[in-house]
Image (cartoon, rainbow, N blue to C red; front, side):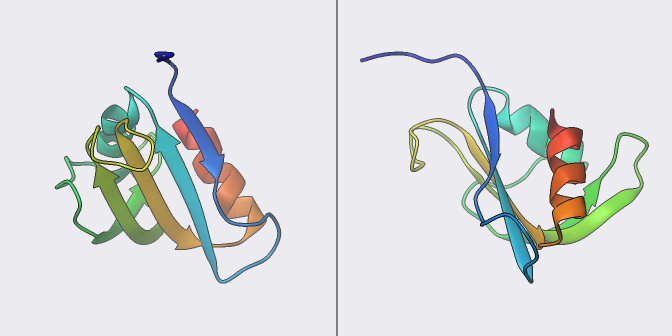
Length: 99
């Protein structure tokens, strides 16, 4: 089996305008990203409604965050899923925040 050590981030919903936009983070740094964006540790496999924070602590958006601890996720790795508003500008801002 090929072991990857990179953490990846991608928009899981189609690009463009939409009511809901989903971003997924998968890999060894997903928990670290969750802590940075949510501002606290997330309980695995539990949907939490909270603000998605910028580096300075201000809210970029508010939505649902889910954290799945590997190997009990669809990738077998730690996974963070952020479900927020689906505008393209906001999706880009969240992805840049994660990168």
